Structures are given as structure tokens and as C-alpha cells.
Amino acid sequence: MAKKDTYLALLRRGIDETTAMQLADAGLKIGDLKKIDKAMLVENYGLKPDIADGVLEIIQAGGPQSHGKERYLSKVLAPERKKESKIEEIRFQRERRDVLAELAEQKERLKIAKVEAFRAQKLVMNRLGKTVELIVKLEDNLDDETKDDLKVKIRDQLETRGLEAARDHEMLELEGTPQDIVDYRRQHVPTLVHHACPECGEEMDPRQSRDEDRPDEYALMCWDCEESFQPQLIVNVTARLDGPSRLLIDEHRGPRHPVPPKPARMDLQGVNRLIEQDLESTNASANAMTAKVEASPLVGGLMDINDWIDQTIAAKGYIQAQEDREDFILRTGAGATKFNKWMKKAGLYFNKQTGRWSRTKER
Image 1 (cartoon, rainbow, N blue to C red):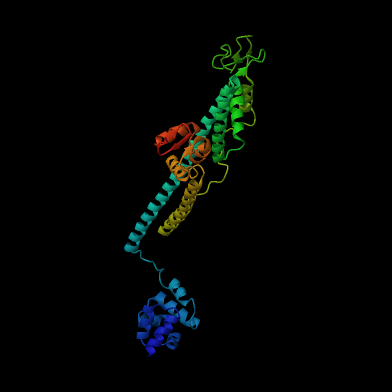
Image 2 (cartoon, rainbow, N blue to C red):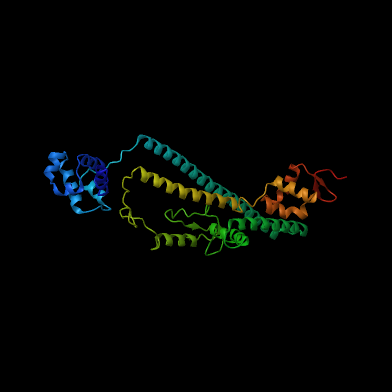
């Protein structure tokens, strides 16, 4: 019983299990250890000199202490080195491969969502550009037209095209109004492309009016009054390029912001933590981007044309251009001129007397 008490008392004071068992087996007690010296512990009980010093220091310090074992291990024994298990290492490598695969999948989802958002926006932008060009052309024809019935038809087409432009304009969340874009295309763009002579006011095409006597400058020659001049647009551009507001890049200048140092070499746990953080941020952004694309009016707000036809036929039993053309444009995103084509493509029959499209022929 005394041997066990001595062993436990030595353990409570922070002495390692091997040394405590060795001293307890020798029949020593705590009181005996306070009376002997280092030489006796080394010669009679076979302890190493550094271990004997540590045992005497702990015994002379008093009773059990909370940090006795840590102090004993740090002063007497070598630092404990945790042996890396081969199984744990293989398991970590497998988990890292799974995390990297999931991270690559989330990055691919993020890239697909961004591409889908850009594709939808580009589609609507191209459609808006074509609609604006048609509106400009129709307005020019309306001014030149003399027959009243043709003017009525052109006004109807302008109303339909304006509705399409307003829809696309709202989807893209642009500033201004669709009419501002039309006015810019009709009024401002020609003034930027064709230049007028400052003397006689004759407009000229710059591709055919270059002054060959001034090859180093962008100068035009008026063939009516033989006046050589530089357009005001070129003067403004040259002043902006040669002015003090132009940005200059100095190749030998250092970076504007401090460059962070290279990161220190990380262990397996640091790499695992970094991968998990990247996975969490990428997953969150990919989910947010995908949800934003799905909720966007560019993609989520448009119906399939066949679905719209089936839904309208089920609700009313027929489709009529005067009643359903506007809803067809807004819900499907198709042009107004494609209305009859899609009705024929869906296999509907047209009744000339009522102006209705239906599934069956009406006699």
C-alpha cells in the first residue's frame, strides 16, 4: 500500500510514470526523498543526473502543483514529438482531395452562373439595339411618307417596337428612357460621323474627304468651297489626349499600395484550414450568383412560347392578335412580327372572319 501511495504522490507532483514507479519500487517515500541528495539517486537508484535534478527540485518545492508535470517535462525530458500516423496522413490526403474536388465544382458553378448572366444580358442588349435601329428607320419613313394609311401602319409598328424597347430597357436597368436612346441614335450619332464645312455648311463623309496635303493631321477638304479644316470632334479628342488630364503610366514606378509578403510555409492543418475557408466563400458566392441569375428578369421572367400558347388556349380557347399580342411580347420576349409565325408553327388554325387562332378549324 505504501508503494502505491508513493507512486501516486510522485505522479501528483509531476514526475513521469517510469521514474515514479522506479522510486516507488525502491521503497522510497516522500520524506526519504527530501533527505537524500543527487549523487545517491544517481549511484544507488540508477537515475540519470538531469532526471535526478528534476526530481529533487520538485520534491523540495513542496506539495502537488498544477503545473508540476509541465515544468518537469520541459526541464528534464526532451520535448514530446507526436509521431505522425501513416493512416492519419493518408486519411488527410483523401479528405483534401475530396475538398479540392468540391471546391473545383463550386468554382465551375460560379463560372457557369456568371456566363449565363452575361449571355442573357448580351442577348437582351442585342435585341434592344435591333429594336432601336428599326424605330429610327420607321421614324424616318414616317416623316417621308405622304399616304395616311401607311402612316397609320407605321405608327402601329412604332408603338409595338416602343413596347419591346421599353421591356428590354427595363430588364437591363438602364438609365434614361428608350426614347433617349432613339433620339441619340437618330440625332447625335450622325453629327459625330458626318462633318460639316465651317464655311458653306456642306456635310461630308470623312472616308472620301481627307485632305491629302495634310497627311500628318486628321484634316478634311470641302469639295464645294475648297476649305481645308479639322473637325471639332478631332480638336476635342486631340486636346483630351495632349492635355494634363491624360493618364500616363510609369514603368519604373513602384506599386501604389504596399505589396504583402509571401505567406509562410504552412503545415497540413494550415492548408486544410485555407481550403475550407476558400470552399465556404466560393460556395456562398456560387449559391448567391446562381440564385441571382434564376431570379433575374432576364432569364426567369420569360416563358417558353409553346407554354404560353398552351396556357392561353387552355384559359380562353383561342388566341387573338388584338387581345394577346402585347401579353405575348411581354411574357415570351419574342418580337411582334413573329406572332403569326409562332401560331402557325404551333399548329393552330386561323379564322379570317373572327381573327382568332385555335386548335380546330372553325367553319
